[in-house]
Length: 305
Image (cartoon, rainbow, N blue to C red; front, side):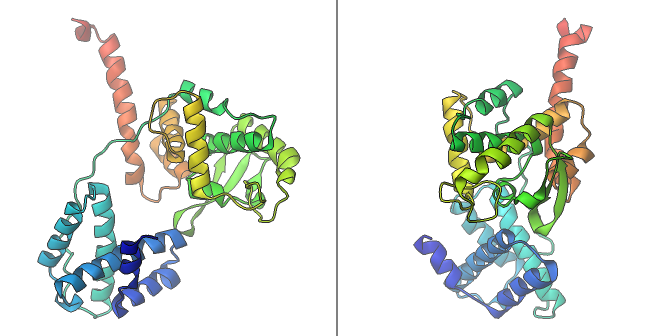
């Protein structure tokens, strides 16, 4: 942890501590989400401390100054929206608990977010990347199983590394995914991914001498980290000579995009991705719109004039 983030985490306030306890006990948020809220709120406390502001005297103008402070620090609209979301929940809680007489973020709007996706792989690019691991070696076979699963089920990288053998029902071709906010969902897999996982679990995983009870293990028999998944994805993308900015999350985007391209409806994709709000999935609707525009341009007689 760098000095700045360490300093941020040292700043505290009983209102913030109470709110974080509320999120943990009452809302049941995941550890990752809770850590994100804590970091954002303690960053806000540090700002107040530097400006000698008291939290009870915060106004919408104070929040505006904080947003400007974050912008000068280089945060993009999506990160700013996340910070504002943390503050909105915090101040609503403080107002509801009568810690404060007013809610200073009640009328503040989120910065406009770009409705664009990161790079999405083509079906052919996915195929080439999947073919890169050496399946004659245990690490290569494990990596192929990881890549197949990321693309077959649209998993987040955290969902992939926390997957346990008990979550796999390879007979039925289903897996139980432990998603954001401790929300589980059932996701199907296609036959190719099922076969790879069956062979991995039966023939290759025992060679890792498991110490921890996760599906995917490192050389020491312990669960993989998110960084390890990121690095292996980068390695195989490089080997495949794919010139795009690809991360594990790119496989999730590609999964959703290819389903919609194939005719899947938005509601189904929402359920498969584990989005609680359909608006989080609607970012993919431009995929269908772009495809329709291309078809219209190609086949409408007036488009060719």
